[in-house]
Length: 145
Image 1 (cartoon, rainbow, N blue to C red):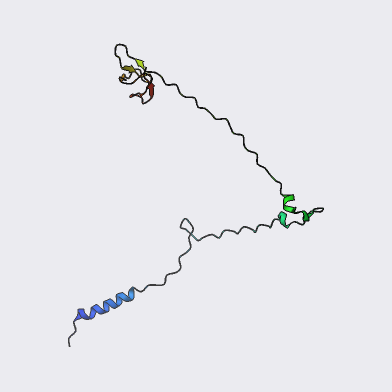
Image 2: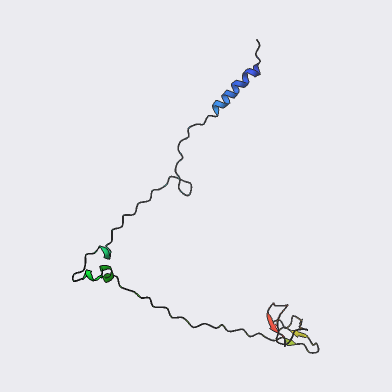
């Protein structure tokens, strides 16, 4: 019986690789702070709050008649009625006055914009007087004369 060398090496190689792939025991990770360094700090615990005495745990006041339905909490706790805040008067904003376009002599239906008088003429033919028109040069509004 004759063995071939590659047939014998292959199972031994596979067995060695499988043995090498077994997981190793790693140490527990070191706790880190929020920046990723060092361990975590334990913050000091705040001292316990002292217990405060409320009106219900106080002994009755001397000379108090508890049979009339009046309790210590109503005697100790003052009744506060909120006062409504005065309402300010409504504020009316001033309306900006809108300028009129300047008519161009000798050219009916054309005006000069009051916001850009040197920019050029604006064609307002077909708009009745008093109509708001947007100035094409500045984007502001003016009225047709």
